[in-house]
Length: 119
Image (tube, rainbow, N blue to C red; front, side, top):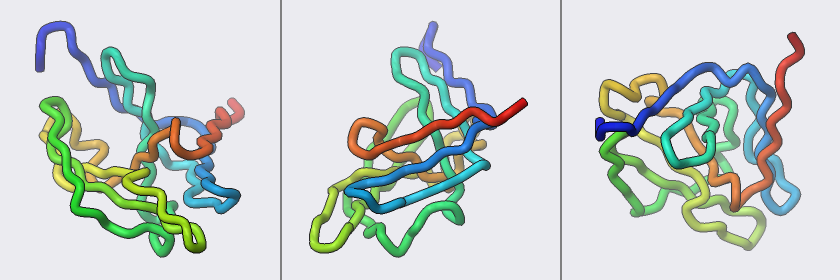
């Protein structure tokens, strides 16, 4: 990793809901929270907690030196397609293994609700 750049991955200990255009795309109590230097916290959800029938894989891919190669999906809500609103690292680098296959939604492009678990 680059000097000074860190990634921390831990259980979110929160109830996460993702909606778009009034349609619930995901709901999970099993999310992982990824904190990365210079970026807002991101929540990665198990695919079993995501309504995959509303998502369509795209040709978009990106590479992060700190996580690996990402694949993207668009959400289709009725006739509206919201391009590349969610991504996943199917086989991340070893330092990010905890997010392998989990899905992460752009919080600025969906309605992301994070409700901390009761202690």
